[in-house]
Amino acid sequence: MSGERDLSRLLAGMRPELNAGHFVFVTVDGPAVPPGLHPAVTVAESEGLTLVVPQEEADAASLPYDYVAGWITLRVHSALGAVGLTAAVSRELADAGLSCNVVAGFHHDHLFVEHDRAGDALTALRRLAERSA
Image (tube, rainbow, N blue to C red; front, side, top):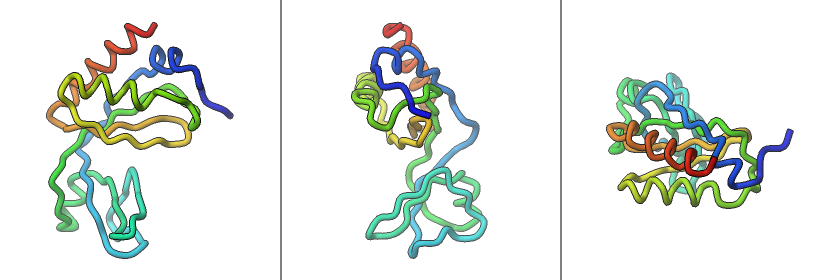
């Protein structure tokens, strides 16, 4: 099942959707996810295991964090080899003064933006999709 590669189709069809909740980036020692955590994302780094988890789970586990994010999923099925989607999306958000942490899944791209400005990010992404249609 291959994803879309055409940038104009990707942008026009991205259908950004805000997932419910507040998400935080934490790091833990070792390769295993601690009990009680259900990460949306894991990244193994030499310094430790980075996890993106619901804020309430990080709080319950007394894990420190300093960035609270909203999680936006681009509902278009993008090919992992597609060129330009991340660049176009990050440029649009940067022009709106928004930071963005992008994670590619097999089916979709996921954006983690400052939670308090997630609505602004959705507006910017929807404008980009409309201009691309």
